[in-house]
Amino acid sequence: MMKNKVKELRARFGYSQETLGKEAGATRQTIAAIEKGDYVPSLLLALNICRAFSLPMEEVFWLEEEKK
Image (cartoon, rainbow, N blue to C red; front, top):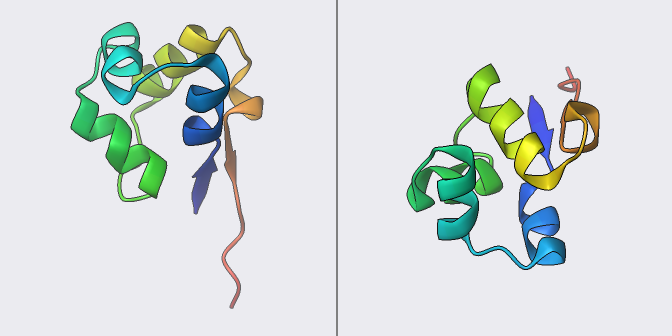
């Protein structure tokens, strides 16, 4: 399962969902869905989100192993 710190980082940087969406080329609704874990972004969108924060991918997104 892919996890992320998008909501935490967005708050730290003072971005609204709308602002981050515009920076990353996504809608506010898509950013909200990513934050809730309801949507896994494409590689391109994930890279654009990381670029908006000027952070490497592994500081924003990571894989968490599912428990069996």
